[in-house]
Length: 158
Image (cartoon, rainbow, N blue to C red; front, side):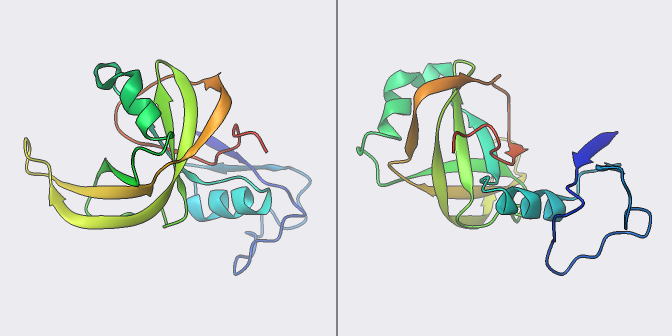
């Protein structure tokens, strides 16, 4: 079960709270799956930056990671499973993890749909980001992973 913290005073445009939450003293909403529209609205309202995390493989090396942030690249493409982005928008971020540390973020410039994974033939999305991105002064511990994970950006320093 996933628990979403919901501020009862938070107004989400175009969304009315379910009757069970209207006037409820409980700040928790229980859901089978997170409602990403709510998560995005909460993140936007609190100054957080919605996006995804991607782990840079160790074999790519630190030099590649540096190239995302030092001005050597104008843009870069990350790959994501699926045929269309359902939860991401242009302007959201790709947060980069390397050696189990969050190093920075890059703003999403556009999506290219219709690509195929050359190994499996399954659809994938190319997520084109603007470079150079924003680099943290000190990396934050964050476990690396395969694939794509969504984040509200709450651990990004304000």
